[in-house]
Structure formats: C-alpha cells, structure tokens
Length: 276
Length: 93
Image (cartoon, rainbow over all chains, first blue to last red; front, side, top):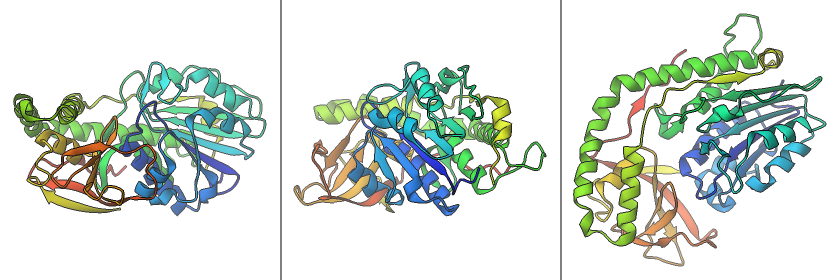
C-alpha cells in the first residue's frame, strides 16, 4: 500500500452534541503528518458534525479536504472507488457505538466496508472509548484485506499531554502517526506491515501509561485542591457560569488514566498489508 | 493558530477550575474577533458547547448557530501561575 496512491484517509470526528476541539486538533495533527508524507488533501475526508467554517478557522491544515457529516459516513465508505481506505475514529464512544448524530454501530460500519466493490485493503483504527465493541466481527472477504485496530477494549481511551503537543491528545492516534513518520519493522520480516503498526501502537501506549503513572499523583494534587476550593465558592456565580463550573469539576474530577488494551482483528490481513 | 499565555488573574470571572481544564488541554479558550458583537473578546470551547465571553470572562451567549467568517480565532490561550497540563515525553521506541 502506498498511502499517496489510490488511498483515501477518512477521519471520523463526530458527535451527537458538540465535537470537542481536542478531537479536531488530533485529526489536524494526523492530517499534517500524512500531508508531510505526500498525501494530497483531496484524498482526505473528514466526517464531522462540527461546522466546517469553524473547523477550518481552528484547523487550517484541513483546508482542501472533503467534509461530510456523520449521516453521510456509511454511504461515503460504501462508494469510495480507491484500492485502499484508512479510517481513523477520534471522538467519544460508548457501548452504543461511536458518538454521532446517529450512533455508528459495528455491524452497519462493517457491512458498508465489506460491500464496497472497489476496496482491496482497509484499515480501521478505533481511537474512541469502548473500541472493543468493534472486535470479534466477521471481517472475512475474498481477495480483500480488512483489519480493525482498537486503541483499547472495554474501557476509556487515553488522551494526555505529550511533549510537543499542547492539548490532551489521543495517545494511540499519536502513536499511529509516529509510526507513519518513522515506520519500524518490529517482527523483522523486512516489511512494514499493519502488524508492525499494531505492535508499535501497543508498546507506545503502554509506555505513555507507565510514564503517566509515575508522575500522576504529584501533578494532580494541585488540581484536586482547586476542585475542593471551587466547590466551596460556587455561590457567587451566575447560573450558566455555575453550570460551567460544575462541568469543569466533572471533567477534571473524572479525569483518569485508563489502562489501554490495544487489539487487532484479522491478523493474517494485518500481515498482508504492507506499507511502501 | 498562535498561542498566548495570560496570567491566572486575567478573565477574573472564570474560576480556577475552568482555567485548569483549559490548561490541561481538555477545554480551549480563544481570543477572538467577532464583528457582530464587539464586546465578545474570547470564546470558551467546553465539552458540551462553545460560549462567547467578555474581556473579564463573563458569558455573553453560546456561539450563534449561524456564525460565519465573522468569527476569527486569533490566539489559543493558556494561563500562567496555575498548574499547567501534565505532559510526558514522546516515547522513543
């Protein structure tokens, strides 16, 4: 697979509510990486429920890409006429599927992929929480390689600050990008395959988790104290500001470092898909 | 978009907790220019919505649905003097 030829990249940055800016920045980071590798913006599709003009104002690297809504996602996948498709999801997820105007569930997504008559190699990277619900589906199709990669199983996915990235970024997606920038042949077969990519993502993610755990307690102490103080001081705010205050307390108070269980479905296809 | 760091005393109507969420890279504060409402100086993008704010950080309104190119994002803002985002080094594998 040559990612600059006959290949479409499709980012799923969707939401039933507001698409969080950190997800948009994750996608933009990846767009910058693949553009640096020679991928043409016309081969990049962003499926998002955010307003295009706002996205472009915040993420200028997305200029020239194609925007679709989450409701157009499955029909778009079904009609792509390239040989290769790489789908990356980076948004919220739950046991009900990928968060979108209408949740994107495993079976319809898989059917849209499998019934596309043109695609030969398909990689789907699930970066959202509870990605494990996309595991254990039937990806077999004659003469076609379909591989699903999950950032984690039945748990939250990990976003965190990494040096050089000034927001809380999806760590597995960062790992994917880093491997594309500098692929490593981990199994030593002389090829850069999706299997190597998977192993890299798993090692990278666990390495980050280890580092976080070493420093987590000290870094969060100040924030916890702040939380207690603000819970005491809430009485002076307007209603909307008080609501925001509660949401900020929730978002910080619920901030955890979940262990990631990266997974791969369809190992033979993962070995078959080679990156040139 | 360029970044700007303000002292934690700026936008006094925003609580320390909200500023923490911004510094942690979970929420985003932007310095903006918005011609239809010149008193809107900042925009706060949270997990659930985005709001226009005054110079002091008071909420004016949610971003209008029909907002167009009138809204310009000038700087991404973080705060000094309060905990910054925890960061780990990029793994060298």
